[in-house]
Amino acid sequence: MKGPKPPVAVRVKSLDDFTRLALALTDSPPLLWQFKYEKKYILSAFTVYMSWKGDIPLLAYIPLRKKPSSFLAYRSNGEGEECLFTDNIEDTRYVYAPIIKLREAPQFFKASLQGKFPHPPQPLGVELDSLYSLMRLLYLVSSKEYMAFPIWHFRRHGRRILGVCIPFEHYYESNALPVFFYIRVGRASHEPFLRYLTSRSGGESISYSRSTGDPKFFYAKIIDVEDMPLFPG
Image (tube, rainbow, N blue to C red; front, side, top):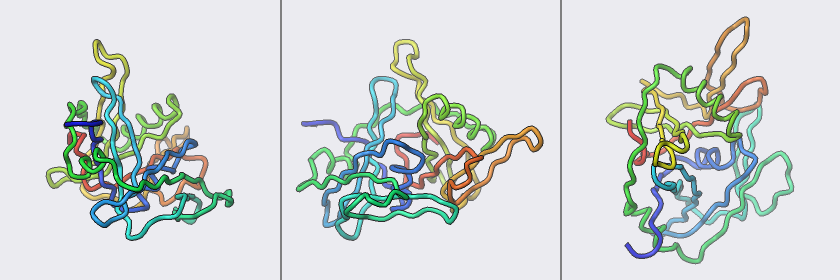
């Protein structure tokens, strides 16, 4: 294949999910790419995972009905989430990501959307016993790395999967040992976040939440995708 290797394409199910992936629980908004492909406006963002040898780029994307404005805005409060497109960043209640608009999609982006991307070695799949173990893991890793790892939600072999990919750096001769920690769930909540709390009197508490408005909780964002070709499950 000539040119840059195409990233692994991941279609996100809704604009809310895409905006949550890009802007929820982060202080460093990503650069968003917009281009036209097969008569649709595609909004996309790169997410990179450290893997066995080198890094694996994911192209998370969502088709839009019309061309977006210059910025994607997001906020989460006690009422829930809100996302919108705007041409200015004056309202301080929101966080923003700039959108760069391409005259034409690069060939390696087109190949990615067509599924013509390399299939790198999968992470090690580790099934956990419960959401509690998953949230303990995310709480520890997020506290150490100062970043919010997304929980990916998708269907695999008729079962719903909630999982997160964590790289453990410098594993023997490899750059990292990538591990996909996951649980299988019978049904999934429509709420966009999981929140976690531990106290001396009540022990551990986990619940689904529509917002991140209560500061006493630790939050993890759930991203609903059509499929996750990179991860086992």
